[in-house]
Image (cartoon, helix red, strand yellow):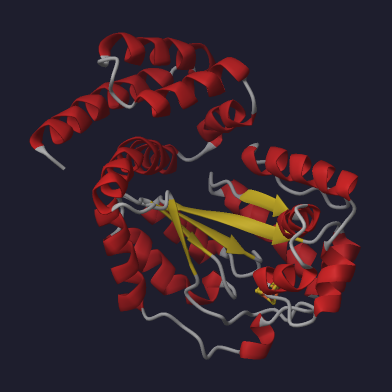
Length: 317
Ligand code: SF4
């Protein structure tokens, strides 16, 4: 990035940091005021599309707006890291660098990079390939570190772990969060490996968000994932809440994905491969629903995910 770009970033970061301190007093009342202030003091041609996105989220008061307000229930250190890494680095500055890199290299630069630290998983859910592959396929810490280092050079500051179960590699995941403290990390997880120690590590590094997967209510979830898994997830959510940490709960995201792909005419075989099912019958029977259901599921999934919901109730979600 050239000198002007760096000055621009530093100036905007200073304005936003002051604004965030102001927001702490009364987020709901001060959020629109802060955005109005940013629009007044920042030159018109700086981060135009990114600022427009924030402005429209505030005006519509939809899920993104709710997400912003829910952040004030978080541990303050985790909240500050989220603003710095997700809002400033990944969304504002990162996307500007991505645009520059894309124009220079003539290719698309991803906003987020998905990576699988391991194929291993501590569960054996019906139809999932992870249990069959065992723990043989792993990226080394150095490989994971290298991917993130290269991504940052392109302007990507958001990293999403999938698997397998990424928290089988808890120590490496935390070490990556610590080393790349300017990035935001989100991990899809079955939630069963979240314990007291891990919550403390999350509080220490501040830039890790678990996205907990469930299949449905207790019967549906445990029918596929194993007896007692639903209860373990409830306990994990309670622990997170007790530590001032929130999770994103992705219920049925995989169902929604399969149903939407099906609606778009993607062959069942391809959907099976995308979801990682070893058996096409699992994809067809468990995941792919009718069109109206898929719309409801998608809407509910995004609403739930972005609203950072409270702890799961005992018998409902
Ligand atoms: S579906 Fe997820 S939790 Fe279940 S075995 Fe596969 S990777 Fe593990």
